[in-house]
Image (cartoon, rainbow, N blue to C red; front, side, top):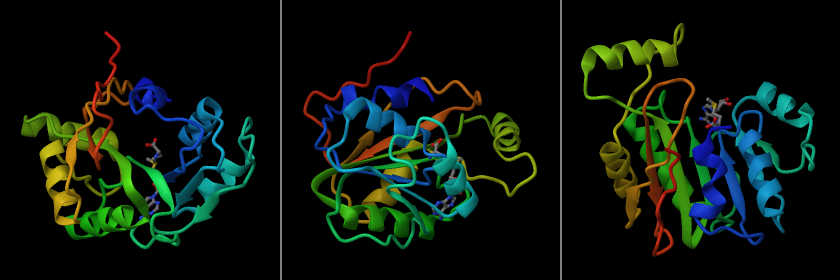
Length: 200
Ligand SMILES: C[S@@+](CC[C@H](N)C(=O)[O-])C[C@H]1O[C@@H](n2cnc3c(N)ncnc32)[C@H](O)[C@@H]1O
C-alpha cells in the first residue's frame, strides 16, 4: 500500500470510532490496513462494482473480518443511509467517469457523510505537459479507455458543484507505483492542524 495512505490515521487524527467507507475498495487492502491500525468499533465497509474484486477481497489472507462489510454496488448510487459514515475514501475511482458522474458521486459521498465528516479523494493527475500526460494516460490504462487526469483544482470544483462547502488539497504523497502524479483532495473540514506528513 502507498505510504501516504498508511499515514492517514495520524494525519487525520482518526481513532476507533471511525465509521469508514471505502469506495472502489478493490481487494480491500486499504480497508484492512486502516482497520488494523484503528481497531474500528464499527466494521469498515468496502464497496466495489466488481464482484470478482470483492471475491478476491474476501479470500485475501489477513482479512480479520472476512467478507464482513463488503458490498457490491455503484459508487454513484450508494446503498447506505444518510449520515452513515464519518470518513469516506475514494481512491483511483474517478478517472473513467465524466464530470457529471463525478458530481453525482460526490453528492452521494456528501449524503452518506455525517455533518462534520470527511472524504479523501485521490486519483492520477496531470503534469501540465501534454506529451507527458498522454504517455502517463497510456501507463495508467494501456488497453482500456483513455483516463481523465484531473487536477486538484478540478476535483475541488466538482466537489463544490456537489454541495461541499469546504474543500482543500490533501497533498498525499508519496505514491510510488505507478510513477504518475496524483491529485488528492479533502472534502469537508479537516482537523485544524492538518499537515500532511511526507516522506523525504
Ligand atoms: C484501481 S482500483 C482502486 C483500488 C483502491 N481504491 C486504490 O486506491 O488503490 C478501482 C476499483 O474501483 C472499482 N470501480 C470502478 N468503477 C466503480 C464504480 N462506479 N462504483 C464502484 N466501484 C467501482 C473497480 O472495480 C476497482 O476495483
